[in-house]
Length: 331
Image (cartoon, rainbow, N blue to C red; front, side):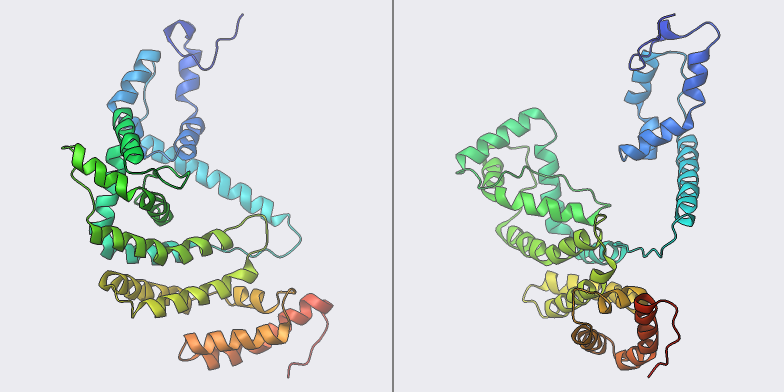
């Protein structure tokens, strides 16, 4: 018996005993994987167009509900979590995890005060990319306004991902003249930013750039990152402090809100990640040790107390890693 092409599902592929229908309805893993892989909303299965298309392919298929898809994704999560636990249990060495959650939360808090300028830019990009005809018209505007010195195309913003906001700003700023031109020839285009809003967008991009670079650096998966975390956090702290006196009121407000959010995560930092910076073999331990002390004491009012309290632990970790489980007398 010839095996039907899995990419083509229609009523003619269905056996009399309903095997194909059973396969489609009893494979929640595949449905959940599709939602996760393509970053789709749970409501995707409720879209009328999708349901109509699936029914066209196979009228006998029963589409899952949104709640069913949520349940499927949770099952995948639990299964993968258990697999990860088992894998981690077989690793004989220590493992240190780092996360860029603090950069995301801190940045999103600051972006809340810049909603007007961001809204116009976000809607402008969405307007242009909404149809092929608009893209062609915008390309004409780019040529008529003198072209752009970049290979970057317009990038859509995803409101739930702050780094996509930075990427959107990075790309859209090259096309200011083109959007101005589009505003003159397209009566339906209502979102063109003003000169002041473009200026503010430029400052916002510069303001967010250190966060973006730090996120990429400490989120790397092909090199150790625990030794990078502490110093990158401290650099962000210095940048926020400097931005509190920025001449632009919106940038000042962004820095203030981000500083408050940042303080929460700084006060709860992992001492293991601080040790990673001190014990980095590529640096001279004594000078890095003193630099660490300077950073802590400058950042936190009770930094000196924290440093002295953690000093014995730092020495213990270093000796343990260098000489094994030898007994050490702490100074």
